[in-house]
Length: 327
Image (tube, rainbow, N blue to C red):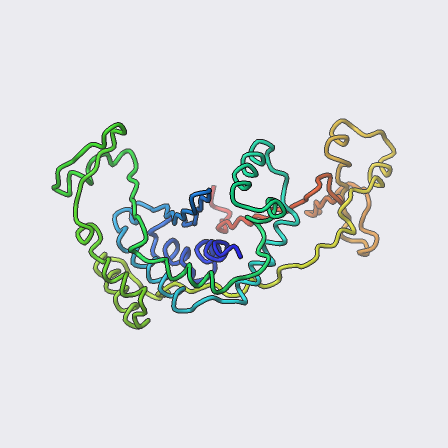
């Protein structure tokens, strides 16, 4: 059932008005947020990691307020089966096109998996969602609450012991490890703990929004048009169930077009791309030519891959327009 795949997605989701966007773009409190999990024969540990900005480091309580309000929204909404099934399709797609792992890592993972999975599930048991289990996922969601969590704030080295000294408490040193710490009641360390717990038990959304706005105002942060609590993701649209392989293999025609022997580079990575003419009909664009003068088009193309599991990475860079007077 892989219920953690569902949790992983709703935490990592970075769409409009998502948890990530609200805390980073709208409030400027974090640089990123993600979920990490560690599973072994003793069980599974999940960690929600917030990479805070300087502002966020000073207002960690606000980050936790927004986070627990988001968890309360997840619990109130229940299991979104359309989202769950689309995650199942996405996981299957990644499984079908997974890149080859390191041999040492593979052996280590299989050795651990053999302690808890049947032989026929060793490869797919920790990866595929063979049958979504909303009851199991719902029970897991019910367990996610402040009383079942540990919260730690890691200070950068330049901060030193300032936070500990500012607390006014006795600074102690952990034997054998040398880590310095203080002891204080939970209610003192996390004054909003009762509020988070009540949210998770079904507090009205309007009240949650009001208390969040009060928390932001007390911290000197402008909520403005911020979505509170952050928006939950919907079904993942457009996950392909079949990837056509018609043009996957690298044709040797392109090498033959050059009328020369393969170079050392081509032997490793396949034929070099050829320049396209954008002025010819679409069925006759594959031609070798020099870019005409006064033409900005410079498009190169090569069909096919040399890898067994090709993937494409697309990146978009946005730059501010400049004037002719700017350097």
